Amino acid sequence: MSGVAAEPTLNRGPSVEATMPRYGMVIDLKRCYGCYTCVMACKTANHTPPGVFWARLLKGESGQFPNVVRQSLPVLCMQCDEPSCLEVCPTGATMKLEDGIVVVDHDKCMGCKACIMACPYGARYSVDEWESYFPDGLPLSPYEEFTKKAWEEKSGVGVATKCDFCRDRVQEGRDPACVEACPAKARTFGDLDDPNSEVSMLIKKYRGQVLNPEFGNKPKVYYLPPR
Amino acid sequence: MNPNANGQMQREWGWWIAIYLFLGGIGGGAYTIGAFNWLVGGVAGESTTVSLWIGFPALAIGSLCLLVDLGSPTKAFLAGMRPGTSWIARGTWIISIFMVLAFLHFVLHLFTGTGQTSGGRTLLNVIAILGIVFAVGTMAYTGVLLSASKGIPFWRSGVVPVVFVVSALVTGHFTIMLGIALTSGSAAVPDPLRIMAFEAAVLVALEVLAIVFFLQAAFRLPDPRESAERILRNRMFVIGYFLLGLAVPLVLMVVAYRTMPQQSPTGAVTLLGIGAVLGLVGGVILRQAILASGALPTLNMGGFEFRRIARPKDPKPAPGLMPPV
View 1 (spheres, chains in turn yellow, cyan):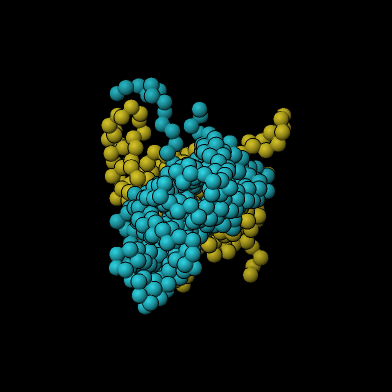
View 2: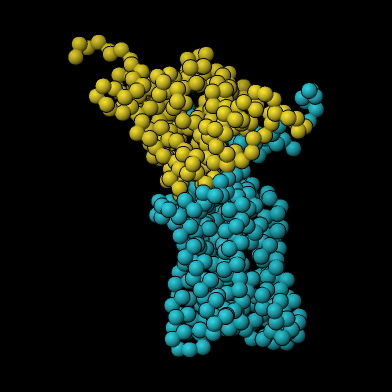
């Protein structure tokens, strides 16, 4: 070893040694200013219907007046190493792939919603019917027609759906849509098993934490603390 | 009312699932009591007959309610393909086997006269013992289904299956009483009814203890506490379940038990019938209220609490906010 810190690497796809990456994400809460760009980027990229937010933003407060701090918390599917959604799935529709991403096979899902009840992070959704964004029974706009078709082709109807780290994009060597769109560069995506990846180094350097570790799900989305 | 006020409650499992859990409980409870009476040969042959008329149909209708709630019911058969991997898969097998046993018992006992011969009686005894095992499994499963849901802290209690088993026995018992009251009316034999009133009072008292213990345990932790407070603010739960579904039937059963020998059969049957109907309505309300009070857990990070988790079906803009196209 030369003693010089190694350059961070993204290491998306399978490496030449054919070791499968274990994808994870780091969200720096000091950088996040709650602009909802990730939420909108996710909706645009995944054509999610009204009311479905694979990427969400929660707001929390701490302290007492007048010393109150408000904090944003972006949340998404934590792609847990021990996913409780997988444990309760009766049909085998929920699977953890070799790269650690948890996906739903909509050809197998019967829509029992047990996985939605099992996820302590509230990351799963089920959509029986596409509802218009607009009130008063207006017909779907051309954009809605397009997104509805795209959603039904990709995610199905009446089945469980969730964030899959934009797996299609990742396989093309791109970042998930929320990572790419974040104007504050608060999100970083990469291989948690590679000690030289940016995500691993950020977690190590800034003591990345997972949300509610007491749930025991071993999430792969880490947060760098806000203060 | 702010539609977002409900933002932290689960909204996926509603009335269909409540009715499914209720009917599953009734099927299991009624069969257990009827088959037990058959095995010990005591209380009333009528209770066994009525329970067999109730057990299988209740389960069949309950299963239909579950199918209605499924997002993709044509794939429901897949739930039975991987037994042992999840509670729903196990439950599918438990309920299916129980339905077969209940149906067999129903047909053999009521339509073939199998119980008239010694060999036939042995066969029915074996079916009844196996049926009771799977009936208890079905009653417990309705609670285990909820307690296995890690995302709803209120349900993550070992007491939930106990509450559901006791409630299933109570509602099963009430259904049998109601069946006897409706079929026999004033011709009902007072002594067995008196014993059933006593049993019902004991079971209702046990349910009161179970539900009080469940709520008291929920108050110990912040997230379940929120649900417990919510369920106690729910008028339908307090008045419909606790008062009309538990307290009033308990009083009616005790009164019926104490006055049965002196009272006219019609008066006693009326008392028991009213108590049974109220108890049954309370059983549905209990399950719906527990489902509707399931609050999502609070997320914590860096000293902040993030209590509201947006869920599907966020409210649409109020009519008039969007200009007409």
